[in-house]
Image 1 (cartoon, rainbow, N blue to C red):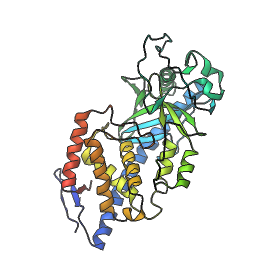
Image 2 (spheres, rainbow, N blue to C red):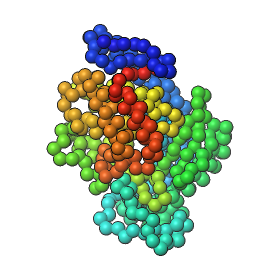
Image 3 (cartoon, one colour):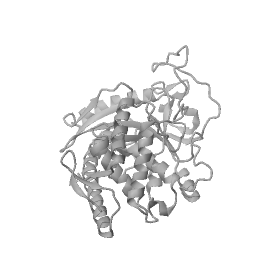
Length: 381
């Protein structure tokens, strides 16, 4: 049976016990209502932020053609990622770099942002990172060869970010948006801004990105052999859309798979399953109960990785007929990853997405997940 009562905070709750057909319908109606409400609120905020970012990036592109303007195409914009309701990631495509090819051999060089060589390496690229040379592109604008972004042939993310930050500062002023947008201080070279919307303040991380739609990176050795999900046809389709390289550190470019992730989600429940329903409810619980706040240690991106891993482990249609079983299965996977401080990236498995996370914060979330699993209750906010 479904029991609706009062949660500790006074919110209604929904027990995930076995239920009759009428109770199941009630459960699904409530869940869909919650998901629709969240989607409406987030979409409204996304639309407001996109209008502002579109104006700013259009001005930036006018000042420097290497940076492409972001167009307003709603919450499903592939350049726009909702990490939390008030924390967004926007990738800004770079122009003038086409015909990418990977290099097999590389002599690692390290230097200051001003070009002075360092006597010893800082660190080699991690699994999700790589160097990038302008010679890896068959066609490139002359501006990418200039010393303001290039050191001995390397395209330096920190230099690209420095130019982008300066252009952002000028564009905020020239677009008369100083009352709505302000640049936030950052301990790294990432460009972060605060955007005022009619309802709230949103933090936006803007990342210059090289889009590479022509090949699949060697570091992403996916899929593993003998896996039934996704299908081989889907795999080939996903790989044909390529990947991105994001300017998110001083020396190395970070591999990104936004198009691949979007394609994995598209048509996920064509077999009538409840995978996305489980994901949406888990996201709702994460935001309302398990990991609240404007910049939570768990983001929607982490939950998406859990979704992919669970779908791969349970590829059969019959595994996703029952919402309760599918949802608890996914939460158990999340609890295991958070408890062990280890969440593998779905495409580059050597990467732990919790490597630099605060372990105390993770333990706090793990405790809340453990309590939930002892008595599974959905908060009906």
